Image (cartoon, rainbow, N blue to C red):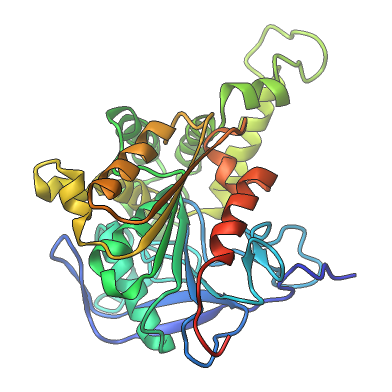
Length: 379
């Protein structure tokens, strides 16, 4: 029996763009595709659209299922649907896969029209600004002039923030969740270790592994294992695994002995079969590059002064990768400009991954804020 609060069976769509896109690096994508899904209905005044921006390994499949027997719904399914915090009875929700991804939008594994071969190592670097520019093209394609809200967690929150700077008149509300105004040195370091694991894998072939019919699987596994550690809190790992032994006794070898080891290997193996290494490299670089204050001599308040949206900023107490202090930096900069800002610091044990969890307090915060967004006539 289908859950009445689910968006149900959904089908992805692809938008083709023939007009070149000049990237922040100066390189040009001659044409590109964006794959996306929509949930709910666009109202008659086209004033109820909400854009979902995904995090590092996310994609366009944010809610519902592609077929009835799918074991796992979209990655933010607990948030999106009829009567859920992001209520599809009220909002028209758009979720997409960013450029450089590996789930249907143009990326390194796509065919380079100039060579007839996969882009591979030749695919340009992409930034949060580039993603926002391409997302704006998608909204134009859909005939949406202004968003009721843009919503994102982690790297998605950075995109939500960037939207308010690059297209201030096209965003009425921005929900910036478990995010930061830039990466700390420690976070840049984690990303570099992950990239080195991939790039030093002998199956990487300088990013042109498609031509060699290989996958840098070992590097991807290590990168994901490292990343996964940073997404969880010590309390969450302790509660779930502690020092539990897989077989109840020590074996005194290098095989899996602890449940934590088994879990990390499982996550690494699963990721290595589902995600493209070149995409992972570019996504982590986009994280590293994000820094709105950089062009303003480090003055975040000045950088955010061009925004016009109202904001909800949410952080989680156990998130040590994007700590609450980083969210408070955003809040202070917004308040310095006398913007309307709501801030919530949620007590949660899940670490950075808390933004993906169906925590009742967290969801009630989102529900209350989103319920107060005016979508105008024609709803």
